[in-house]
Image 1 (cartoon, rainbow, N blue to C red):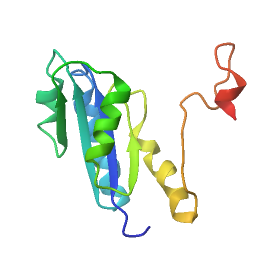
Image 2: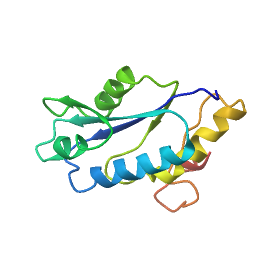
Image 3: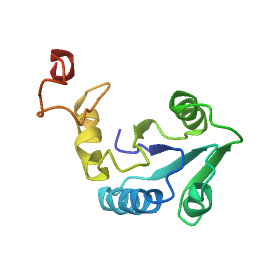
Image 4: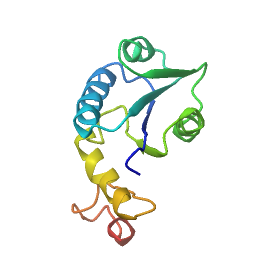
Length: 133
């Protein structure tokens, strides 16, 4: 795992207001981690400047001509990923790139898969027990 490459896949649809910041924060965190990485942005048929803005950064930008949905965009990103570790981050800023180290560090200690949830620790009447298992 010490020679691992991390692929960060970011599905995006009409996220011109947030995509630049998400990519910048991801680059900053990944540079600090010190592992080789790639950032893959999948523009899912956006009608705004998401693709144009994402193209300004150290990222591979893939495009769908029309909106196919988040699952399709993720699969497309996974198919192009070169890394043996894959992290997904939403382009709207809902996932904090600063959490990437806490997601990948367990993989170096024998863990096979790590999943995160922004709902953990914030249980209320809208979150079920399944969210905190």
